[in-house]
Length: 468
Ligand SMILES: Nc1nc2c(ncn2[C@@H]2O[C@H](COP(=O)(O)OP(=O)(O)O)[C@@H](O)[C@H]2O)c(=O)[nH]1
Ligand SMILES: [Mg+2]
Image 1 (spheres, protein in one colour):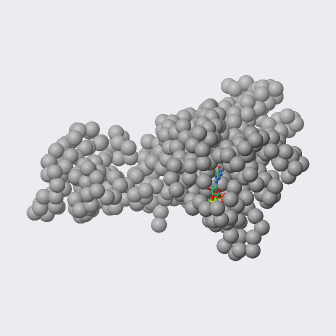
Image 2 (cartoon, helix red, strand yellow):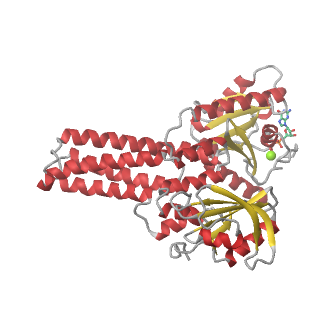
């Protein structure tokens, strides 16, 4: 059952996370919010002023028992997050008090809110568009400073403003196009084909830029994943442990120790970086190890960056796995480990020669590092190189896409604009072009949630937690 059909109810939920805390906040929203709240908090005046805090004792509805000493804040309709009349009651934290208060508020006539229902109401009351509602979720879920900054910018309307501007631009083109078709638009002068082409081109280019930003946006939201792969015993687990500063993976001199993927994470320049330590790549008859290796291949596919670790002291007998060669050179770092075993200082040269030997292109274009995981200075150096890389990736953050729903719709918009442009360039009749532009407009409306179906809304709001 979706949340769509019961919009008239007054709803309530505890908005703070469960467990023991200094305070808990219970929110009541809906036309009866004030009446419901007053049954439990009789000290709130009937004609409460908006944005005022009232102090007193919350009581059971039957007035027989006091529950807690609380603060109640009143927000009038159109002046609240949901757009509805809202009361927020702050009580002492802990499970018992807040649950009892919630129970009494329900007894007083409010229904328990479903996941995301407060934000859903904010959307229905046009306090937020759909892109902004989704960014509320992203803000709550952000696991790094950069991700939360971006979500906040979207909440404030950055991306929405771009989409609105795009809509205006498409409207302009459509209107001038239709002036060619229909004399009803006599106040609009028909635009020349050259002008239509140039306007369309610039919109296509701007949509392209937004689409390109998805990779960056997704990395900001979820962080960067680095798969650490290579032959057994190269020092992959040692490297991960040294980087995250704890013993996440078991390290031994026995080849094939790591059989599953193990993750460890770090914040690098405000971006979450997840290292995935993997089972060593080699031919093996061991069933468990084989399963581990197929996970390694999956980890390579999922990764933003692949670190291929090899043992400089044992290059000649290092097996090379084809999966590594499929990684693009800009996504692959080759790490020659155990420099301490190469006593003549020829580590770089050895690694280079060996790479020329194992692959036609010698992994040219991939970055190379020679280091020793046992040497803290080596590890610190690799870390600083990683920091530089992260800085580079995020040196310029524009209105970026982070959400797959948005990306799908931007793709729809782009396809329609592309076809429209092609038709204009070929000198096709204005009706055909207009058809494509209207399809692009539909995409825009869907993006902002001006046109929606229940299924989309259900999917968006179901991801929220209770009380939001
Ligand atoms: N000499 C030396 N030994 C290392 C270095 N890094 C790791 N080892 C050792 O190599 C062996 C295999 O390490 P491990 O991290 O388990 O390799 P993995 O199989 O690739 O995960 C262990 O005995 C480590 O102590 C290094 O830089 N120098
Ligand atoms: Mg290992």
